[in-house]
Length: 202
Image (tube, rainbow, N blue to C red; front, side, top):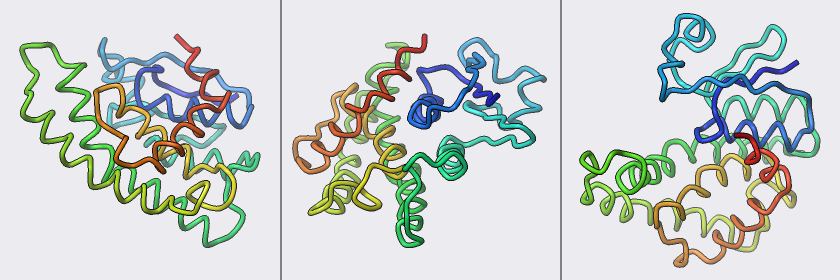
């Protein structure tokens, strides 16, 4: 039985979405950073970084949400792993890009508009993040021109990984309307039933 460590309102949601897409049996082991669970010695043996998610699949233990999803899509392929080496490269490219270019402005805006206590929020940081967000959004919009999905004609791990980050943007008021192609793509991705099943976890 696969074990996924984390809580839904975190980066663990990405792996939950993937597991639901793959329809493989798994157990969600609730580990929450909010109550110090990620710093307990027993969890640090699983992920010494003290972050969620982490995954155990038999003798394999992994951390980093994007790496977990790439592994799951490759091992339990149900059509989510790209069919060509070229599209595999695109899946790696977009997964890394989501973490290095897209996620930081999205998370910064989320923190300073929603998640931090009011006294700790900095409107200037949130507004600056909203400006910086426009650049990766435009890159994604351009990449999707004339394409239905990022790595081939079908939905793959590349789309899931990028959409899992971009889907947070509307929550904190980041504007997607300047990128209608990316906005339509995101709507296609987030309408998938597997995401609804993943979001049903409490």
